[in-house]
Length: 206
View 1: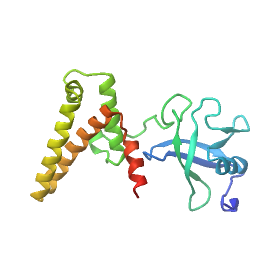
View 2: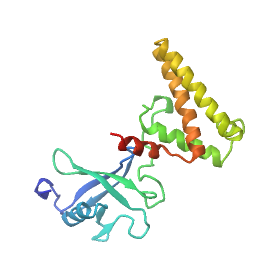
View 3: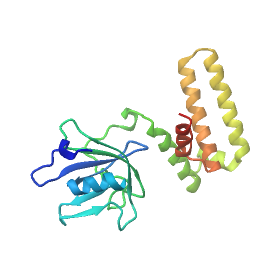
């Protein structure tokens, strides 16, 4: 790429946003100069310019929390960079997954629009229940009963989804499909299969 499209500021820097390529979560904001931008493009790993230390730094160089770049874009004005990355470990120096964890305005959970990330979110809750059982948890009940019970529930929910579809009842199909996906995620977790494994398998089939 010809970097003449990038409008560096008076200090020769451009802000660069790192976004999780899998979930869409915004991980961090840092700055790049021309050299760090070229290195990022050449190596495939995020390299930034530290304004406080006045030197280049490869993300994860000492911590191991690297950012493998999948896609890079510049905005309509050429004065900001967006990178979609595969993040290893936390992105924030505090140990948080994302640097953006200080709330200013937050919607109530029920008002927050759902997206594809809800699959991973539900799977993470299932994983947590498996490690940290909670009394009365239906997920823990399924783990206690084992794979046979899980398979039976997946079969039942698949049948109920089919019945709802045959009735052409959109609301019922939505409800039953959600039940099916949840039970399938529990079974996947028990089998050591992650949503990412399934995403990658689907990608291979494109």
